[in-house]
Length: 140
Image (cartoon, rainbow, N blue to C red):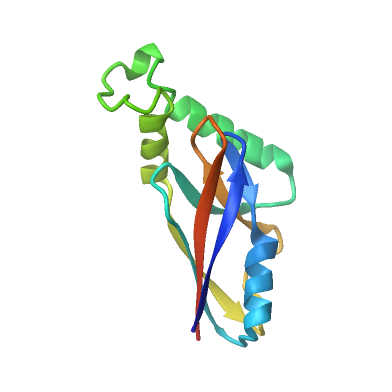
């Protein structure tokens, strides 16, 4: 078993790939087979395994979630009560609730068993820059 925390800087909404950092952690651990559990320690961002070949996929996902859950100052969101931290805060919590804060990725032959076009992303839901903490836990 091995564990570390990494920091991911964001500059607003969008998907931030960190596959390489997770792969480096697994490689440095010298694991043959196991399970990498990835957990984000925040309630207004999430994790995704998604296509990493075409950047249009990331843009379209970001736009989809922006349309699905607009900011609380949008007329359709007047029902929101939690607005203390700004009009992007409660929508960010909703987006995080609709996605996931933890993912498990098998490790085989010392490598993440991701598909050819799969990458690991932090999905930032807040408008302003943040520094997000992600825990990587490798069990064998």
